[in-house]
Image (cartoon, rainbow, N blue to C red; front, side, top):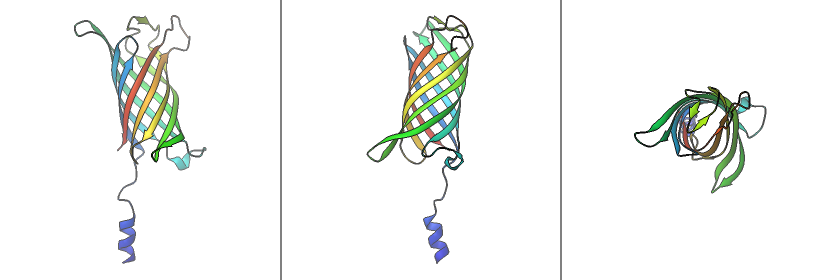
Length: 168
């Protein structure tokens, strides 16, 4: 009997380290986009700091600027390490602050009326992330892309994103 009770008390699965995210992106000047991402979450017991979370994200982005028959599209590949740290709870739901700096590759350096000079850009992020349950989150983020002044002009591109993420 003890074996059956132990089996019933044990969860049928453990949360995976692998996940995905889908983001709706809104940028300045009527830029809209979609981001599809793969996330690899480092197990907490392997991290040197308590309560924080770390994951690596690889993403494929499609940005669009302009109206129906006259628009520009930009394809972006990005990779970022991201750190999350708990800051408060809302109705027993943990909320984390998130930040990361990664790299990205833009298909077009002339986009949304701007010349960003280089195909290679840094992807900076700052956001708030709420745990919906053990394996899914909802996030609101500010994203900034720029070449960090390596080449002029460097006007940067700014976005707000709404993201849903889930572990496999």
